[in-house]
Length: 280
Image 1 (cartoon, rainbow, N blue to C red):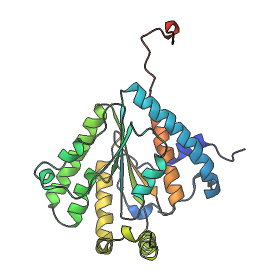
Image 2 (cartoon, rainbow, N blue to C red; image 1 turned 120 degrees about the horizontal axis):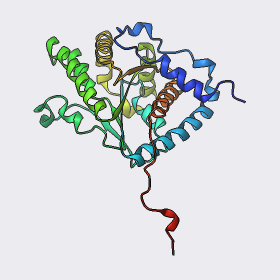
Image 3 (cartoon, one colour; image 1 turned 60 degrees about the vertical axis):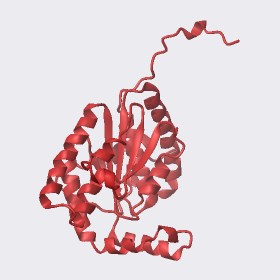
Image 4 (cartoon, rainbow, N blue to C red; image 1 turned 180 degrees about the vertical axis):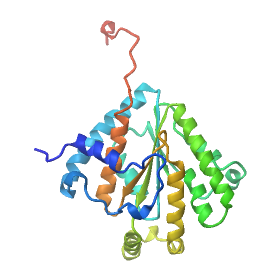
């Protein structure tokens, strides 16, 4: 018999790591280790994940069949925090026809010739789809700010433009969930060292990772401003403690399932009377 229920874990995770509306963000107040909710242990994680994945499978199938709503999931983080790992773990086994991943790297010249949201808008979910942004439009108020590619006035203006863009998507029937995977600088050091030591992980290492690491305080300030200025009821941020990979994955999975279960989704009614159908 379970010491805690999956339902209790989902609801507690959703409340505990949600950024409150209009609250200022000080990432120093958010523990990247994170104490396990209701005492759940790594040994219990497999059983919880199995049940949550079953629920996600059913909910994603319902979303796809109903063909009314859309789901956008934004994943942002410092290097090594586990964006790829979260996406792979949370969405394993779902119907690939209804789930897409969009990754945003350095913009092309064509993309630079348009407004900063142009390339993003092309990737948002259609009806019945779940789309996961691995990095996102937030790169344009983070890396561009830290490296002084844009002025103070520009990145401040972009906060408003992002809020309005996401509000429009929400008004059009999109559930938006945004996750910041929060790791400590110490944990990042250990993960970068692991990439150097393990021949199978060497390909992940880039000298640029070290240059970006030196800018850690500036990135933390940029994230605090971005999260605080773009958090909204229609597009909330969650700050996920990510030093422990199993706990990080479980939290994101639980929150997504909990939010999908709140949608009043129904399977479409078959207009044809199936009782009269005879299969020869």
